Image (cartoon, rainbow, N blue to C red; front, top):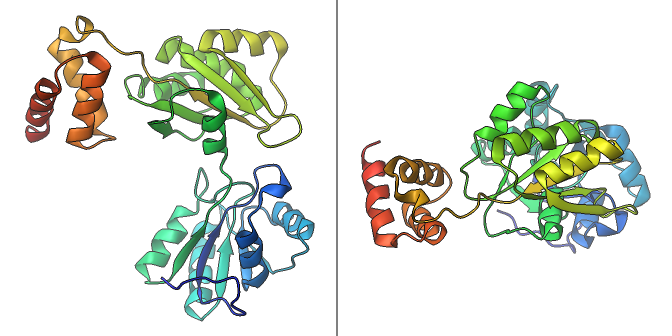
Length: 290
């Protein structure tokens, strides 16, 4: 990968993944502004949103619309421009590209074509919410947006009921009360945080258990602004609760989806109070039987 220097007059050809502010315009990095000032074009979700951002920083570059509905059509054109020697930036409407937006196929195909891909890191609503929620952050799963329909949403939450990590998801303000109630029914009444308008003037973090949060927003009405929800991991199981082999096996198999054998064994031993050697032996048996 080519080394990037803010002193270069001409950027080398490649795809530049540029994180932009999630709210506060002061959060853009000096490097991000420098890259955006020197690329040949900017691929973005909504040209109107990105045009406002570029204007705020005194930047003017050609904008190319790239979103989930036109990605298959636009992708070859963007890659062809890079192959021809251009530097193209990829931005989302806010935050870090590829986090709950369609950019990963563009990055995948750029790598497949042996084109340079460089990330200019910066703001992310997921990480910002985790830092504010006051819930464990050593392990977390970002889930994107829940389904719109109640049945599908409950099943979506239920699929992660044993996931040994904090859960993070986005939700629209109008669906928040129903979504929180479905999460409580599917996951149990865990501690959670509703984080909204992050980095903006009316930033707010509301802490409670899921049922309490659902009742709060049912009574007060959906909040304004963009919302990120953080839900704590399942409570630690006792030795007695985990004495059932089926329960232990289920916990191991769930952990192995996200962790190595060694890490999963150590985590489950910590959570349950079982001996690490015992958990590792059973995890090894389950892994070998796949």
